[in-house]
Length: 84
Ligand SMILES: [Zn+2]
View (cartoon, rainbow, N blue to C red):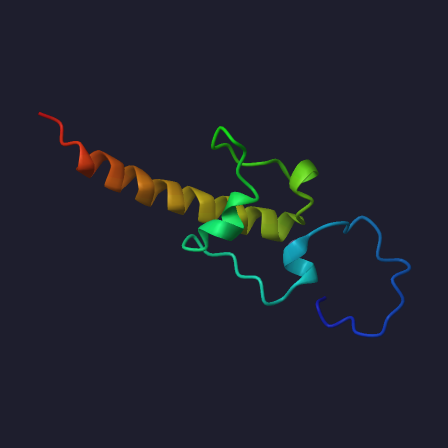
């Protein structure tokens, strides 16, 4: 998949703008907030695949990473303001 070095970009259709497919060095990690930010709307929602341009595999990974990051943020958030 990712090893298409000198093949013509002809019949590769559909896979338009998945930046993770395009750039192998890009990591999908819940700690990589900067990367994840691209896929979160201003309201904190996950940007749908149509808009993000990710392929299914990576969109899924991004979604999982965002959820994980959210979870952690939530945990720290709730521990910050202890419920009395
Ligand atoms: Zn991809």
